[in-house]
Image (cartoon, rainbow, N blue to C red; front, side):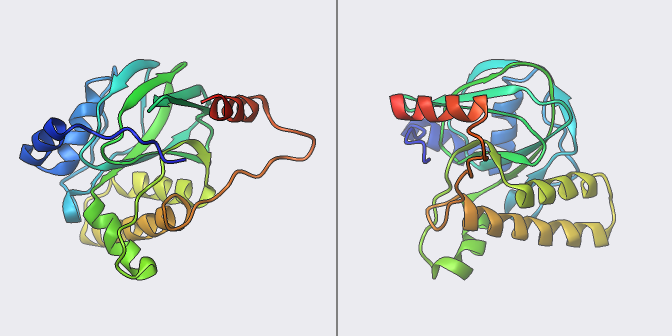
Length: 220
């Protein structure tokens, strides 16, 4: 599902004036968490930023539209998570093997029931589009907002990136840059206007969180 709410012109102007796209997104998220993102090293190509794995507490706050895309995955015990944006609400759980994807400019209310362990990647449209051009023939690709969405491939790449983010050597940086391009390619293939994965319904019916997800979507 694509969330329609976009950042205002004033917010976009502010973002363009900030130092580095990724930095502004990191600062915005840091303001609503009890522990800020655990950034690793210097900015990568196109001002892409990584975090190592870190933990933060429950969250009940609003996040303004960001100046870059943010994708994250989860580790350890899961919690209920919801995102209310543009009059719609999505509910899921922060299970390992799932991702949450916040496209640039999309705001909303976030609620996470309890503490979680997580890692993030912050990257601009420029970097995404470079990978998208290989598939979309130069057409602009828009990402789809996701909340606790099952994608083991993207989650695994994010886990690898969180590990490599702790290292400081040329070979690690080369690996990281290539892995980010692979991550962008997976997001284009499965979470964008070019291609979108769907949730497979388990045999024997839906889990409780999936039922709530669909009910909220239908009610909006």
